Length: 609
Image (cartoon, rainbow, N blue to C red):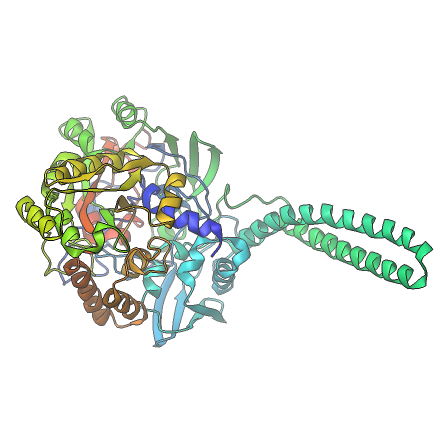
């Protein structure tokens, strides 16, 4: 595995926080679910008609980062999802059921899926979205030289076969139950083939320039050696000339490759700084670290497909970087921005403000504690139990999230299709914790090592956990480190507890494999639960949905009963907009998930801020 993937896997768990609210899990947990219920417009959706116009002004705590979804780091997925679109969207329970750029899919057998693609869709550069562009993208992702972190999620893919212009067959190395969930995640964001080719050419040019400099030096050295060899006899002279010829041939080959790459790269820009998707907005301008401006895509396919060609309604979106949440809220109140995500503390300050609309919805970012089973006290299940029962999860939600979170039982939130409804949150029982510690040989308590990321989100809950553990005699004082600082101690398994965040729970295999497969970079052997490992393998290869569901129910039960880690809570997202914003129906949003969100863009009441 390339170092870039390793850096990604460690960083993403802690850092990719602020604007992932475009893909939450929602509050509708009923088994009866209308997969087409999101297709509602008119008065059933909003009492007034949409109005075109205006630039929507948003605020983000961090700059977008790179703009190719397959490269690290992307830090603002809100903006990314306005420029790129996925093959499949997820419903309210994170099931990949909603056709988007793919119109249908069918398992021909356990290792073959036939997929129909939407016709009439064009990328922002005017090129067609079709089977050829999809195949090229998947081949590009799987090519190691392109450094796509999403390659690790496509490992089961054997090939993509073009059947006709808008039909492909996916061929897998083995049954791949997580395929649809993967296509409803980052690998499913579709990118222009022409832009990918140009991007590869730009990167190849950089490499070739370095190689050509070295090759030119080798040619000169070979020629100098050939001149000197003339005094040593014919055999030396012949060998030297052969080396010159070989060096010159290599240089000519590099120069020919450079010429071809220059043709492809001519006038092009790197996808890391200039995205080319199919979404409702295109990139207009970016100022690194300060802001990005998006402009309306007048050729967006979706609005036209339902007879609403005025979609999207905003002329553009400007996302300004404002790290301080209090400054973001002050700008919202002053009318300098139109919408932003609030912290739980801020919710109380604005929930009754007559000039601001506040919408709260469940968001599946998991806050939890990573326990080291490989060495130290946490090898003993009695210590792991003592840690878990020492934590008052409800108090954490009230004290650190101001009530804006849901208590966790295990990996998957209560609304998620893979959640086991038969599990209850671990009880808060400090007396039991003390007894368990005494039984484990620590009647006077113990000291545990560890760390958390040095950002407010992890600092807040980690410090609260420190106090609760101290109440039962466990002294845990984590070091608050940057991402780079955490890499080495984690690699060495030099910790007992880590305060951690998993950014977004979607496809159940992704989080389960990432955290609990011993060969995963975010495991490194710190946990090795054989029963869980076999269930993860079974969930990955099982295609039948109901069988997969039961597998993940059983996986949660196994992890829960072994106190594998300490699962704490899932926060709510809090979206604040000014009163001039219209079209955000929070109940439909919570009920229908991405299907609703991506098909119902908002607008200004009067067509301007």
